[in-house]
Length: 471
Image (cartoon, rainbow, N blue to C red; front, side, top):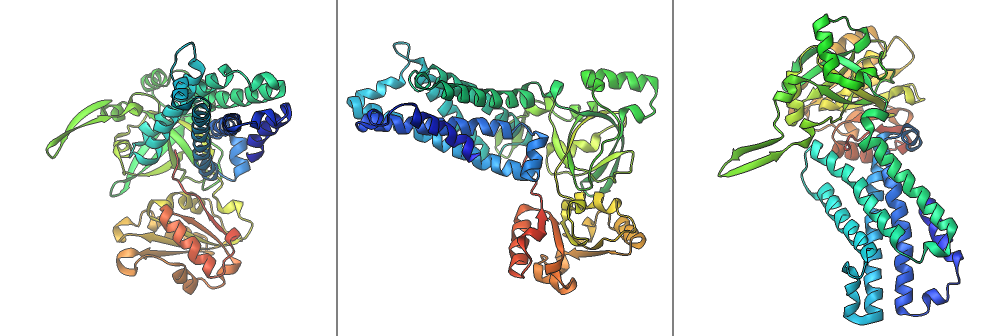
């Protein structure tokens, strides 16, 4: 990624003698601003490619969560580079013509190329500010992220309308054009034409089962394998439209992976209003939910075993959308994208493992446990919960442990034992440095446990986790 951003700088440097381009203060600031712009737009294009959720890139980064982690950092880098570009160019104008030089920001005399750059920079600042500091719902967050593609197109207009740099280097022009096409293409593929281009499978709801307070398990059957009545089948076809023509059949996945899911449920749809005014104390609050009136995909860990026909996910009600999922009706259409992720006991060469789940972080481990047979894996599974009422699927895990003797299940209740620590695990599972540790739970818990395990001598490469802090 660094190389992709450095290449245009090298092209610019070798395109013409450097002396005249750094002959004075104004020329030097302009040249620095140009270099910052070249690196910034290249980084911006890369971020759109990363946001395309492309399988090959996910594999290269070792999981979608790691890819999105780089995506977040790179987005900030791109913004800082482009912001610095704007400051440098403004300073160059002031150095050349004093305060009146700032008039170049105004769209007078056909100077729209600069105006496009300013608009793109302001829109990028607003969008990043909303992403980092506003408490956005999942649906609104997704639409804000999609808006970056529009900002990128405005920035592209600025780059290709500004004269000078491109005219002195044809290879640089071709390079930038290629990057813009890749970035815009990834955005179009994911955000604009995703319903037509992104591979997705069609399912229907088989059942929705309550497994605890605010926790349900949703079972989905492949559309072409489920026997339905003629009237229900027609209703589902009407609700799914073109999606029913896409690939069906049971999804092939590795235990521990996750999928993106959208539901075509009338019952869920009735639970939402796109614009809703409700009272909170002395104030009236306006809720805007664009995602409920359009297709929106939410990530959920797969909890079924690979051999099962039904695809299952476990959902805890933590917001309006997940609470509404309790209303899902059998026969409702589902579209599934995936699977994604690399978090799986099968991706670890070491057969001696420790699994640590906290709360709803149980979900990927549930799929792993359901896939176990009497093999050579030796697993200590620590299931952390707030209290005894939150031991979801604990009885089933005990039944699996009875069938698979090398799986040992140890529930840890915080109300009695406090938060689990690496020292607690080491006291119950000796020889941790020779085992691989898989953790799923709140990001803060993962960070603390990772640090503690490293302090106990566990190599970092033996600690595996996924942080589901992305969309």
